[in-house]
Image 1: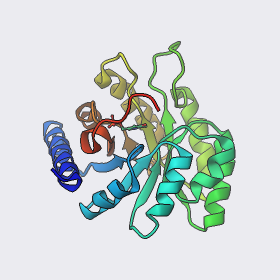
Image 2: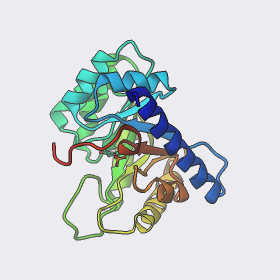
Image 3: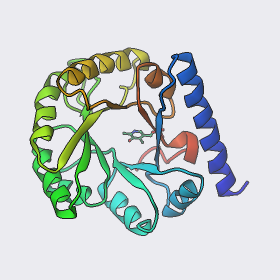
Length: 231
Ligand SMILES: *Cc1c(COP(=O)(O)O)cnc(C)c1O
């Protein structure tokens, strides 16, 4: 099978899963698909665009920056979904259309500066940690810190608060974790009704995320194949 056919098959299967999950949840709104291209070459990004994909996700600044430059001729929105260092935030804002992983106030200033330099507002999602309290910390702000972070994004001239992003913790039923996420989202929407995006769900748990109201899923391996376990 050609690489194009392989990707086309993965894409079709994932779209079917999303549609089935929407039907099961009784949803008739659209669920956006962000294809996570980390570790895969720019040539795969070109094939994806050829197959109709317009939104791709990356989680490492250096790799993302290089790939975005290689694909500068394509009509694409790059989602930055990885850990952010405050000294790289402005650089990320130069190629990203959406930053999904804002998880501390320190990042706001750099993102805002990068967005100002490129001359267009940057869409931002606040990343929420769904780890049970006391668990070893993974990425994301604690749910109680979300209101202050959201306010900081709103106060930044060149940033637009669009909603929340989360990753289900390992070793827990993703449905339970996404249920907590839905409650964090309700609280956010009470203060910021326009911040209605919810980016949740990956190859292994997109059904549970769609059931919990995800407006976007981020899918890599189910479309592009498995990545090396450690990188
Ligand atoms: C890698 C990654 C994904 C995609 O994971 P798959 O299991 O390959 O679908 C989604 N979200 C984030 C934040 C990631 O780092």
